[in-house]
Length: 256
Length: 225
Image (cartoon, rainbow over all chains, first blue to last red; front, side, top):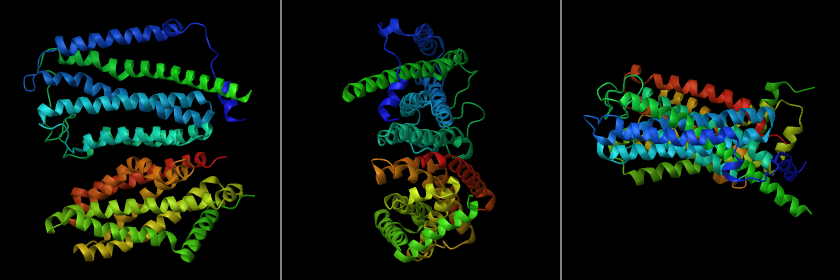
């Protein structure tokens, strides 16, 4: 079977309606719920929660900074699941999931790094420092950029999916590394949120000290760690299906 | 009937060794690159005595990793260009034996470069690099690099970008190994008490075992077709 037929057989039949009306009902609900939840989360973080005594308003960025990392973690997890399932079943839909996970995870990972830098400027007095966790998080983002580059370097779709699956499974190492690095490198200045921070961590804060911090985090965490990545990945998968469909139509026209 | 696993592994490694002994292509390129890199580092960093103690393990490991890129690319591109990979795939051997055989060869070539680097760097930088612990760390570290490198180079030589892609995909994944080897060898060179750094070689062993298992399982998927 040649590549074009392969894509064609997987393509979703075109529907008449397009845009919002064409979305599956669950996706419509999920998208609206995510948007509303983001707004509520922003209100909780920016308005409801009290101002941190030591850090002032800049601490509020944390309500997004920490949850988006876990959002990236979920998305990269989808890349691993997609990769393993693709190698087992050879169904292209699993590769589409892996691709969506890598792209959404990369976006959220970059958001995590950027919000961290904005927070670090007033608190650590520098945008960037060669702290083990910062370095590891940056390398994590570069790994997934390499993943996308690897995909672009392979023309045969079947081979591309296979190699991407293998690299997607290996790449999770850098994500796990970012998670555990503050436990095994005690010289980090990055505060740990769960459990005791390293001795020289700078910029820790007490969940109990300020009013509403726990509630604001409780609201924002599921939004950025679950709703946002899942909604974005779903849209990305639909977009990829469209791309495959267009490719198949193009191949069909060219073959005539 | 299939050739027994280890027999196939050693046959592939022996083939690589024999080709290498005759051409000396890999070790020559890697060795020359490593020497140049060590010299260039000493100019670029203008190391004094104290700075040397802190940064020499970094110089050593960056040099080993970059030299291994050269070796890995050559070793796998050779299989592909001369059509040997197809012959190996047709042969009645287990797919993973190909991985183990190539891994063994790549490990040995990089190890030779590492072993040459130790006395050379001891001389040039006036540091006691020839120590039992450094050798242990060298073995474990090169094993880790060779493992992920063999898997990833097998993929990248089949892509459009070929040689240039290997460093990009391999450096991030090799990071845990790099972190552990640099930390432990710096501690050894600073005569730190063993309790302070023994965790690093232990982490290194865990990382090596995990990578070996994962790459072993994934290899059959990168040489299909």
